[in-house]
Structure formats: structure tokens, C-alpha cells
Length: 485
Image: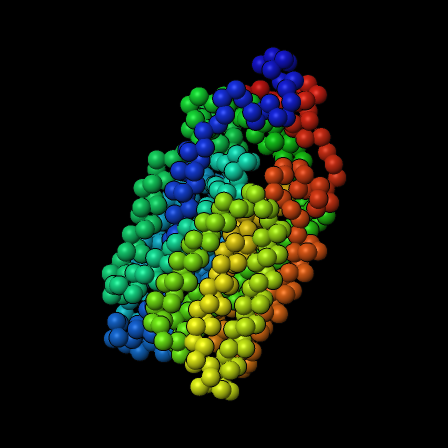
């Protein structure tokens, strides 16, 4: 490789005469994020079936058992996050996603033929483990195959597929018996595994394993046959070489300023995502509407909410690389606070003046619909995106696992104790608590969350307090050669 070939600008490194094809990246992202669809079906399954389980199985499934069936999947997801850094680096991103489909299908079959509540809970734990693992593996795969200019859009596909999965579970639950609904849910992971076979592993994984020829072929697939992949491949290799050169002990990596600030931001947005009350809404949507006394069918209401969630998450895929992350998060948190406050007022009226409250029975569906709209625009997709954007390379693997673990711990806390909060503080008090948390989330975003739209990893790390360093692009601009392939 000649000096002339390496003394190019950073812009030239990622811009050639023939631009990269976008379609293969979109196709691969849509296929991989079927893992998000699988997660959505697991989350949404409880809402239409929870109160009918005793009739289906022929044994008692009491209120406490229902709470555990709804929440234990979050415990499984917490556990599933922990080994992901090792699995992804050992087996690869693509192979890990395929491997996870086997226990996912097995767990759905266990639910169909479960002889006891214990078996249902074990199956839900396994589903939590595998779908929680998808929440780490799929966003990583998507981020490693995408160009910077569409990174944000592709990063929202996981949340989009998740919302489609939730809504599909609502619709299936209203149309099919529990047996057939669960059977359909169990077939989706098979579709994921078969579809993953037609797309490549990520170039980054191949380069980490020193399989350069395979990395080149994979990158060519993602960028199109007419695109010159050599400059981008050279840059990827240089970035990995820099990461290796700057590698420090695990504990030391976590005490740097950007690592600590990145963890604060990453864990913070995950906290406010879940403690806004969104999963309480998803898991107990029908119960909320039933308690509100709305004349509309509860199952129809939840389907409408789900469809709104899908549409607005799709809108977020279009807006996120235009509007930026911070504005969408600010809009999301502030309006969620207003919606849950209004919902609290409604439930207070329902308790104190039920006749008047029933005349405004549309309030729950309107409030929750607006809540879902703004959640889907901001705090739904963006926290998952941040995992691939804000963590320094030295800690990205374990930091993503920690963030996912914390997210699912928050899911468990909200879904398991939502009923307890309702018993102690009433429905109105519970939603006011969620409102107060969303207000805190607004100030958190204002003061601590950086804007990452259109910025390189190095620029984001500088905002988080990293010491400026010469990047691989800078070294190439100055005529310094990267390692040859």
C-alpha cells in the first residue's frame, strides 16, 4: 500500500466516487431487529391473557401468580445481559443471535403445555434471558454494520420492532385462543434464525478475530458491490488498533472521566425510560382501562395504543438524525410528566366522584395515547441508541451489559410492585409518582445528557471529558500509515 494511498483526508476515507448502498444496511438491520419483535411479543403476551390463564390451564393462577408471571421475565433478562459481552466476542454477533432462538422457541412450547404456575414462571424466565440478551446483541450488530449518517435511523429499528411485537401480541390475543396466540409467538424466533442466515457477520467482529478477507467480504455486502471498501476497512482496522493500544485494566477503564460520565448518562436514561411507568402501562393496559370504566373494549384500547406506539416509533426513525437526541428526550420527558399527572387526576376523580369521572371516560385512552406518542419519539428508542454512542471503546462491551442489566432491573421493579404501589397510594398517587420521576428526567436531560447527533465517537468522548488525542483519521491525514492488511 503506497504512502499516497494513505495520505488522504478523513472525509475521503469514508467518501468514494461511488457512494455506499443503503439498502443492504436497511435490510440487515430489519432482519436483526426481529429480535426486538421477539422481545415485544414476550412483553405484550401478558396483557391479553393474564386474566384468562386459569380457564386455559385448568388450575388456579391467582393475582400473586399473575404478578410473578408478568415480572419474572425481567429477572431472566437481567441474567441474560451478563454473559453477553463474552458470548458476542466468542461466537460473534450473528451466531449469538441465532443460538438464542433455540431456548426462545423451547420456552414458548413450555408455556403452551405448562402443567403448573411454576413451569410458566420458568418458561417466562428463559424468555426473559434470551430476549434480554437480544437487547444487547441486536443494537450492537446494527451499530457495527451502519454508516455514521444513518446510524441513528438504524439504531431506532430495535425499538420499532419491539413496539410492532407488542402490538402484534395485543392483536393476536384479541383474535386467537391462548394456545394459537402463543404458538404464533413461538414461530417468530424461527423466522429470525432463518433470516439471519442470509446476512453476514459484522466486519468489526471479523477484524477483531484477524479474519480480514471475511471482513472485506462482509463490508462489501453491506456497502454494495460497486463501493470501494478499502478506505473504510482501513479506518476500521486503525480504530481497532488504537483501541488495543489504549487498552487498560478493566477497573482502571471504569474510573476515567468519560467512562464515569457515560455510565451516569447511560444508566440515567435507562432509569427514566422505565420509571416513567411505560411498562406498567404495557403489562397492565387492559386492567387500567377496565378500572377507568371506559365504554370502549379494553382489548381495543390497548390495540389502539399499540398501533400509535408503532407509528410514532417509525416517525422517530425519520426524525432522530434530523432533530437530534436531546430535543426529543426533553419533549418526551416533559409531556410524559403532564400525561401521567392528568391520569392521576382522573383516577382521583374516579374514586371521589365516580359519576362525573365516567362522563369523561375518554381521558385514559387520550392520556395514555399521548404518553405513548412522546415516549416512542424519545425515551423509547434513544436509550438503546446511546449504548452504542456514549461508552468509551475500552468499556463498551461490559458497559452495555451493565446498562441492559439495570434497565431490566428497573422493568422488574416497576412491573412487580406496580400493584403494590396502587394498593398503598391508589392509582392516582402511583401515576403522580411517575409524573414526578419524568419531571426529574427533564432536568436530568437538560443538565447531563450530551447531543450525539452527527458526531464521531471521538467528539462524543471529548464532550464527556476525554483528553483530546490524535485519531486514526488525523494520523492518516498527516501521512502516518495504518497497519497493512
